[in-house]
Image (cartoon, rainbow, N blue to C red; front, top):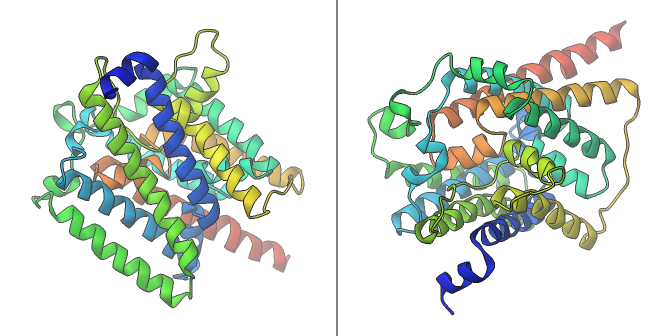
Length: 355
């Protein structure tokens, strides 16, 4: 039985959803064990620390870049076929949405991917915030907020109906991307050694980056042999969270990569927490913490959809293929998160303490 027989027997949608489930499992296990989180990395950076969370994030990002660019060099993936590159990118969406997402993930105390992982371990704060995130993302995609999102995204878009490769845009060869990834990996390992991180968190941090590359390679190879169009995509949680929510509300749902990804992350994180005995029920500390968390989740839902991806979707998945608007969104997420941590958590708390 060859791959065509398998597709005919099980259906392209089911195969695509299975791929999403596999990528989600790898991502969920690795993210739970490594404590991967962009918010934690930005908070360290905002407080002048080059600490372990920053090392883990940098290793994840560099691993994704190395695997993805290596796969392209070996003919296992083609960046130009990625859906993120095949559609127009929004500069205005990247800036506004990225800033909103950065603010939101500090207020919610976790990016959308981290909330999903924590929810699987018994964190009820993340369950509620994650639901608000998914609902606002859905409203921004097809609902009442969609006209606002479309208007902001249309303010400034990339030319010729496609996104731009950052290296090509500045006149550098695409092959340089692999070397940039390797250089970042060396920096990440040096930073990890400085912070005395053990081998295990580094392996799992690399696993998160590998999950991103795995998603790109799986969907690209399926697209090469599929009879129906297949989106060449990978791990991201803004659109998939909204699509997964609608999957359970739609009387005639269809299986796609997105719908397999989110349950895969939940299952992977749950199994990892179960094995490590880290399942623990947690709730909000009070009304103020709940208001802050839900407002942050709403900002992430709209901001992530406007920016074209969340901290994972734009920050790692889009960054691994050097999509220009994705990297701009990532930069704005860092700026928004850094400013919010300084103004709300550092300066704000210090003022309260002196009153």
